[in-house]
Length: 409
Image (cartoon, rainbow, N blue to C red; front, side):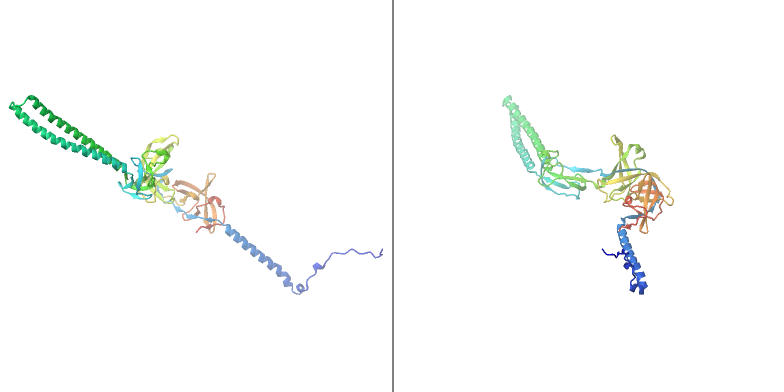
């Protein structure tokens, strides 16, 4: 065993040694880490800006416009565009379709041929009836000839009777022959009349094989094809069509809405209304109440009201959804400054309070507003907005105050 005791090793201080190059150049030791940190900060800032920019939602905005005044709104209702004159044209007989001359969207005049049905049976019946009539007419001619001969014979017999050259029985037989022929001629005439009636019936059956338009309008539905069977009533287990085509008189389009019976007292014939089609929410169409249907629906507690457009437009189509605002008779004064009209889609209503998002300098600002009357697809704002400001119209529920947003181009 050695008498020399080993001393414990101390910590290694070589890592604290300063490099000779750094000792000679102190700037190299100071600025290198600072420059690297600045570069990393710039890269992180650029990435964050790019990410935040990509997450900025796209929005649609509109410029609010000032309310110029007008009739006050009394009531709002929803309904549909309906024609007063609309018909599904059907055949009067059961037959097969041989020709069809219409298609959807085609304009037809009153009396125009829509389709032709198989008329072979009708033509055969017409020919038979005409032949019976002609045969009866031929017998009538023969009877007339016989009658003339019988009348001459009667005159000769009467002359002989006056001279007491023939018996009374001969005169009576001659008179009976004349009366008999006259009766047979009368019967023949009645038979000819009956035959003429049968000819007219057969002709009507033949005419029924041609389907015509009862009024002018647009074909909105083509209900039968060539080769199909059509009938005025449903038959054949559902394989027989009951209509040829559906025609709408576009000049008779009007609005039909259901008004709650609690508010029907506010509606009267001739009252001005404003209609807004669901397909064109920015288009306000003037109209007037044509009639209030004098009956109520007990299940829905509503009364039907029909309104006529002041002027029709090709964009107005049957069965379109429409919102109607019933207006008062007197015009209101122009509204005060600060009252504007905004689309209903721009409103955010929570807890009885209304707000909109105003777009300014790339960001959206939530702003509380006070609402006035509804006017079709728009709503009056009486406080909180100014004429000319831009507000968000689509997706307002997904936005937050101060959020960056890009306007959709």
